[in-house]
Length: 245
Length: 286
Image (tube, rainbow over all chains, first blue to last red; front, top):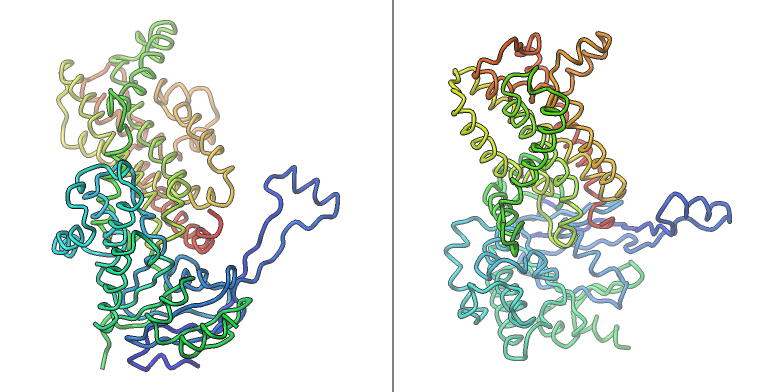
């Protein structure tokens, strides 16, 4: 039984299983033909197979693993986009995911409108957004283009603004998926610095990235997932070393 | 010691559904504003397009039924009769069809960020409302030339009709929208409902014509359709104050309206229930 009474626990993942059914047929006709030929109609893919861990307040944790090891699935379960099939996931406090930022951006809206829309999607109130609008724009360094439609942005500008919105949300738990690889080198450094700053303010971080050096620098703890199971849960340096071996 | 709500453990992705949508009114208003803003972006006529369609429909019905089939003679102020009915049904159709597609259309968001997804069908309904209100004003403006002088009851009927359709369309939008995520068949099915809806209510003809042709039980079934009642409420609000000759409201309009409202609320409840049941699969099925 996890200690949900511990006031410092932020995330509880308790024996979580998640599997996906992959349908091989997509219409009645295909299903019929496949059934006649006695082919498999669905196959099961076990993305997470009994994963348990707890993350406390102010911890920074790297979820590591190769492609398809279930890292992103885990992150989506914590953000609430997916729900576990078995076991349970609990979070305490406000959660915001930097999961592929810019998902809520609409190309036909101006940068300004997109900032408001996305910040609201990430759970901010009108007042909070208005208070932070200037610093969001300043961080993104695209003041000149803020009233231009986003479809005219370069991909770098787009990601800067999207990241800037996400990083300014008022959160207790921040989920980061491959985001720190955006933009040019100076902007990347700025983003990492900002994430570290949030961490020093006591925010809880969960990071998924393939940039192992960056991750082991940013996070103290590492959880290595392999075939849907936790292989190692310890210091991030050790987890990275094991992964590289 | 009690812990504040912010500090309690919750299972991510579990919501109070529809209630949450209204708790996050600001986001809802932004989504509605976005939809309104982008729908006709890049077209010269813009929002006028949403008036062209009902207008053309009106002209077709007016000439085919009013002139050629002579309904102009048997129903007083037939153009107003037609327009008020078409406005009601168009509101329903737009809200329902867009609500059904809304989840698939916003797949990118639903797969990546969690927030109450009922937001989308509700937003579709609100966008349709924003579209419909000016249409009603136009119809009323035309009626004013014919001496439209409504009482309080007429206005109340009009509003009640709007509420019934809004609820019904939201509930059905959630229901079919949720099914549409896994089975896109829902979309095609809804297109058929939309096609029939204008014929299944007294938009072009009068309810008396149905009552005189079908057995009583079938007529009862006919009046159970909340859209039928909403259309009649629209007639009562816009067409009736013109004092058309030998016109009568459907017998028991008010009790039937209460029933229609009840049906609409029930549909919302069913829609919400099914939505919640299926919601867990949205992110993986889209």
